[in-house]
Image (tube, rainbow, N blue to C red; front, side, top):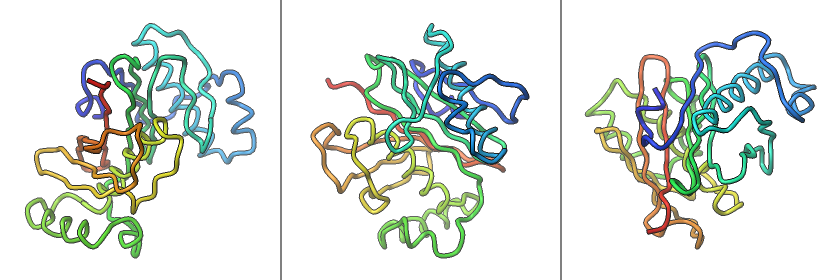
Length: 216
């Protein structure tokens, strides 16, 4: 599912269940030693996905520890992103000569809990989603917006090492499966025109992806 959103230079691996007895490498086991079983399984399977994706770049099995703000620490000269939700885990990686950054996110394709949309969307975004719902009522646009903002943040943070709030990016979706993110928080490391991304939904999941190309 995620590979349909990303260019050919990105290697993607997905899982729809948690295989038993997957190994953890380096400090990974210590990082989840106190986690509940559900969290430990998510952590383990998504790193298994990441190692499979890295193999597509010719990189052997390596630890992928958690770094600043929980962001994964990738091997040198690699950019990447990971995500997990109920029944789905995925990782995507690319060489830094092909992309400056990328972000992926997957969410359960369900409406957001009551009150959450007002916390993550501006008045203009809520009006935009209402218009989209009239055209594509089968899409839970509120959840898709949440996912897309997560993807935007995952692409933003490796470039800037700074926090980006939901209110700091204003998104616009097209029904053709694309979206744009206008960044209200500026940083010289980020393209002035903002980010572009792609989205898809099925009966179970909403997925989004952002890619940042190298400088021209």
